[in-house]
Image (tube, rainbow, N blue to C red):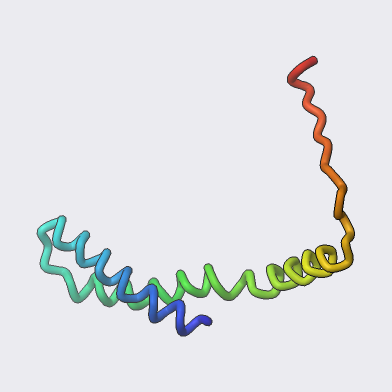
Amino acid sequence: MYAVSFLVMLPIYVVMSFVVVAYEESSHYVEAAAFTVVAVPVLVYVVVLPGVGHVRLAQQWAARHERSGDGAGRQLHVRSSAGK
């Protein structure tokens, strides 16, 4: 998943960085590409990897409750103090 995310996101961010360089009428395309190649793996790591464990645990918990019928028919009632 990490490699796929990296391969999908890298060209998008390289093109975006080149658009910024072109807009600024600069010639620093190599520097922009180098920074992007370093920044995208960090971005992918922050987005993809840290949440895998905790999100998976929450998904498994939700699936168990969905299958067992726990919570079926229950409604959440929220009181508001705005009307008082």
